[in-house]
Image (cartoon, rainbow, N blue to C red; front, side, top):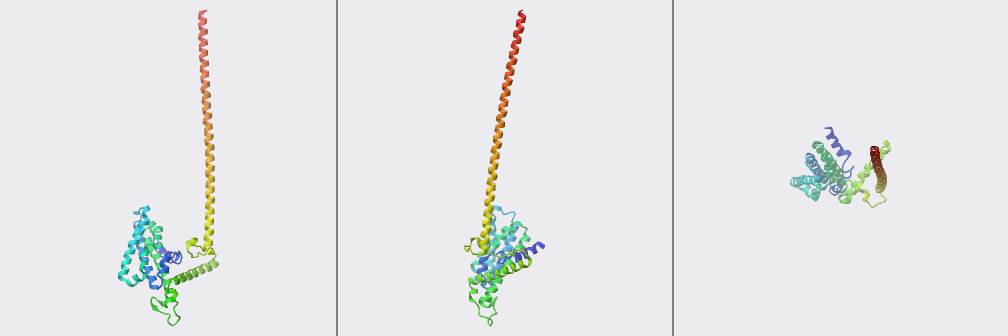
Length: 305
């Protein structure tokens, strides 16, 4: 049970998909114009994530390794279809509001990522709680962004007006650019807290950033520079290792050639010794034959006398 609790904590706080791993950015930015949309998308994703994790874990020993990704996507798509029908039947307004993004849950990198990295390698119960934890963490992220955007852009929270007398709503937060602004300020706040904690504790801050910024063309970006430096270091290290391997192979080849030549020389020497011995044996046999003939002649002369 401790492992299950740990999986919940891990998904909601420690490895939150939205605010820590920066995954699932498409629905995070697209459907969070209101808190209800964010909550609905988050819960739908949680349901798919939990059920697909449970099913994939239960079938992990039966799914061939070579076709595991198509099998995972088929299982996920089946549950997405079920959730889509349920939402269309019982929450038609939310279903219409989310639109195509319900179907796109199939290709959500969080779901496929958890299926590949956790559910396919662990028992069903921990996999179920892993899916619940990650799903609830994703729901938390979407709902928080949705609340902020709805509050600033429409002056309401979950459809309840709260800022009529405080300030006029800022319409841009209800549109797509508002999602980028809100997410950017949230991540900036988290990073500022991490840097402040680093100064106090001395532990290196775990800054939130998109890991794919190596593909960005903005060379002045600190994340780009850091990633570029790391990439260069990795490439240099790889080149050094390849050179070392090439030198080691050349050395092995030279040693092998030297050993082959030495072996050939020994074989030739052995053959020469064998030939010399054979000649000596032949010479000795001839000498013995000559001695025998001489003895016979001597005996014959003796008898004649």
